[in-house]
Image 1 (spheres, helix red, strand yellow):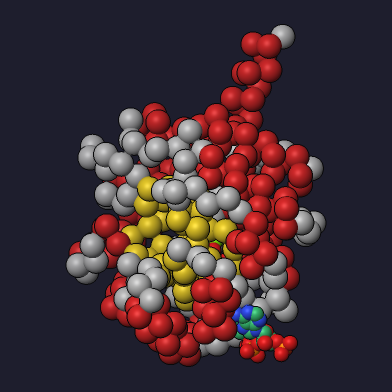
Image 2 (image 1 turned 90 degrees about the vertical axis):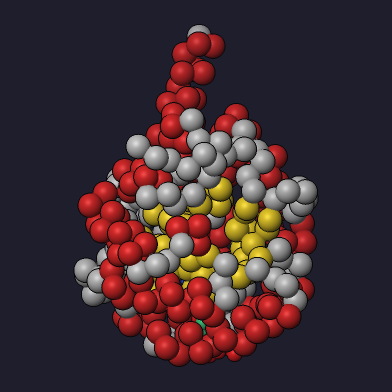
Amino acid sequence: MNYPDKVTVVEVGPRDGLQNEASALSVAQKATLVDKLSVSGLPIIETGSFVSPRWVPQMADSGPVFGSIRRRPGTRYTALTPNERGLDSAIDAQVDEVAIFAAVTESFSRKNLNASISETLQRFAPIMERARSLNLPVRGYLSCVLGCPYEGEVSPAAVSQLTRQLLDMGCHEVSLGDTIGTGTAGSTGRLLDTLLTDGIAVEQLAMHCHDTYGQALANLVIALQYGVATIDASIAGLGGCPYARGATGNVATEDVIYLLDGLGIEHGVDLPALLEAGRYISQQLQRDSQSRAARALQAAADNSAD
Ligand code: HMG
Ligand code: MG
């Protein structure tokens, strides 16, 4: 089986994880989490989002969070920007990269962005233009690529068409969001088959798997076999999506690193430092980590200390 030699792990916990937390964390707690993640050597940390505080109040302090973090050379600190106002705030916060986000279904687009798919794409056009003039890289997200909470099954052809549109608009990559985690190894394979057959370069794809049905690692193994070499993950499996009820967090970063180590794939992340970041945020939120690998490694360490 062919696997990539090296994988880029995109840490989305401080954004995708914390946007869904009921208990508000302080700016200092959020910045400490990002700093601990930086120490682990993660190459990309999605640190916040510049969206409407009416829609996602948990991210209202992203500006101060960016102002409080210690930036590690070699790590890119990124944020979501749904409109030009968000881009202005992101530029003020000196982000290294921004992300626009669209959905494959009209219902999810309306719930998440209060606009149709084509309206959201029109709204992104001036973001792309300004980002280009500033040499600011833009990532594209597509939600509901393997199922929608409102419309059910989604056609791979629709995902392919929107992925192409986001790339043609100038996104350097598209992160394929299994927003509600209903994807399986079978549907992940069928989706990637369609995208690659349609001529989309695998280097421009990332996988973003929420683990609601416990399928994320299986789906990632399939994606790796197709050559996908960028994987989104969330420390301690934090998160969900405020507009997809019942969706749980992304696959845990610790579990992805354990998987990559098992396959001998290079990733550049220090697992003990990552575990420390996961312990920290789980303590702050007063809950158990959702990472099975982190829990098992902690139990093994506790046993050997006895
Ligand atoms: P709207 O209500 O249609 O827009 O929302 P609006 O222009 O009427 O703005 C409403 C209010 O928000 C106004 O304030 C604006 O000024 C303010 P008011 O005058 O009522 O006091 N506002 C802003 N404030 C700060 N920053 C901004 C901004 N924009 C407007 N940038 C809008 C449209 C797009 C703004 C809204 O729908 C929105 O913010 N949506 C974001 C929702 C979101 O963040 N969802 C979660 C992230 S996506 C995700 O999790 C999926 C992903 O992980 C992949 C996957 O898993 O599938 C990426
Ligand atoms: Mg997500």
